[in-house]
Length: 289
Ligand SMILES: NC(=O)c1ccc[n+]([C@@H]2O[C@H](COP(=O)([O-])OP(=O)(O)OC[C@H]3O[C@@H](n4cnc5c(N)ncnc54)[C@H](OP(=O)(O)O)[C@@H]3O)[C@@H](O)[C@H]2O)c1
Image (cartoon, rainbow, N blue to C red; front, top):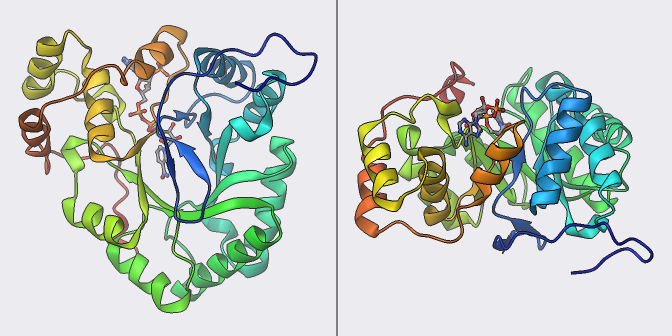
């Protein structure tokens, strides 16, 4: 592992796999989510713990109001910048060609980093479909200028992805959507796989709402693992990037212990069978015109 000259405090990286995105950069399959992680010392501490425990990927957004804390913790870690993968997102009120570029530069300022690894359109919500097409052109410009290394989308349905494909040759590097066994959408997963778009799973822990589910807890007992670890491992088995959020050190550690066991094909199929069980959010991207 590379360490900044003169710095001896950098922690050892966790052995989590990285995958190459269609735009060239590599991304760790496990990232710390920081939605509802309060701005200030709590987020700084959570990110510091995660980096100490070996996470190398943090998922924030303008909406979360904690980009400055994420950047502060990344800088304070003394881990070389190129080893840490930082994602942030464009909020829907800033959709548009020029607005999206201004918003990304403001995010970069708040992060206090020299570039963003992955910049996402947070949701297809916009004043008009043209606005989101213009945002994408803004993101392409940002990527050309090196403000962000990769660009992608979030909460896009196949229809939104097709709309984007009709107006641009740049295929999104990722689509970040709510994905866990209870909202698993194999059609969206297949579509993204065919086009080389990597799926990122938000709320991969179902926000803790489904830990008691009989299938999840039976499989957890069979492996001597926690329901959280089973839900995350399910995502990894499918090739999804998982973004569990926690502000507790022991949970951040627990959520990273998912690369030393695997689920059987039958267990994955049983978990897949839970789909239709309902998501954690009232937002339904399919209703966004
Ligand atoms: N693109 C989007 O529209 C979008 C939407 C939502 C989320 N996201 C991203 O995805 C990330 C994850 O989603 P999420 O935060 O909504 O939900 P989540 O990761 O499924 O669940 C987080 C909740 O689970 C708890 N938790 C974490 N680890 C646990 C464990 N091992 N045992 C028991 N409870 C545990 C956390 O509590 P404590 O913190 O108290 O430990 C928190 O309440 C977000 O943080 C964000 O980065 C993106």
